[in-house]
Image (cartoon, rainbow, N blue to C red; front, side, top):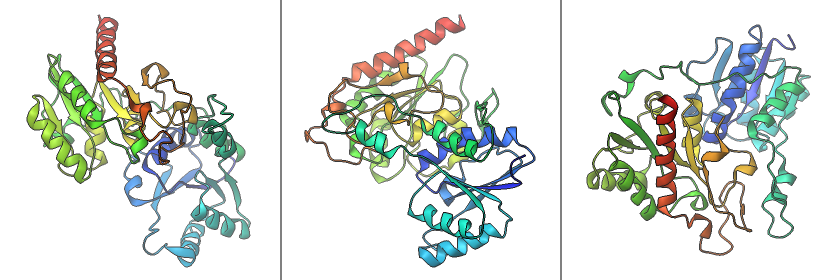
Length: 353
């Protein structure tokens, strides 16, 4: 047993925190005598459903009592009082660097993620681009634990057992799935424009899939823009359910997602939420690229929808403006996504048969 109590730091973003879960749960399972303390922000802390007994989740209030240098020092002291004897920094940003400084000052072992920033810059370079797959975030997270002496064996399958989440949790959203019914999730939004498929085209995807026999389409997303768009689509097409009306919480949404047959998502947090409950994702990529290492846990590259363009990827996170100013990387015909979902459904029918 390398250490008695290990602090894990990953404060944001939601998708990246979700990607820590398969690694952290695997390490916890392999080392039951070690207590692991996950430090993250409040919204992300709700992702750790059915956590191993030796995992504690702590909340950093970076906009309140833990704000600024004094707040981070207070946070470090609070963590120190938990008798932490090693730190795994899975974030490597200014806040976590401050925390690392204090822990090292106190003689506590610290290991930090190698984000491969130089490799990623070559991947998105305008000239002399090196287009090759980089290490996934899962591998990078695992390497931090390896540096602390933990042997990482990835055996995470899902937050739930084979029957999925509790159906009663989403009873206010929809009735339980009927026999022979096919549930499709669609999450058309992302944080940055370079990762959002044109909404007029996504509406065609929703229209076509919701018209399929025995299909129910669920729209995932939050915020004013999502709520308004989803309401329009729900009213225009049959068998469409919107989850944008209010914030249902991760317990409800993850339970519902676990009963989907497939999710259609951008390179966004919803891809990772579906991955955490072992749901296959047909992911649509624009400015970003799976080679950056952010494809969902155990998701197949065969389910990636993207265009081969010399300028792709132009951004690691999709937050850079398009050099062409037209986001041609998202010039994907709706029929491509529709056909991919239909073929996926037919393939699985044959597998079951």
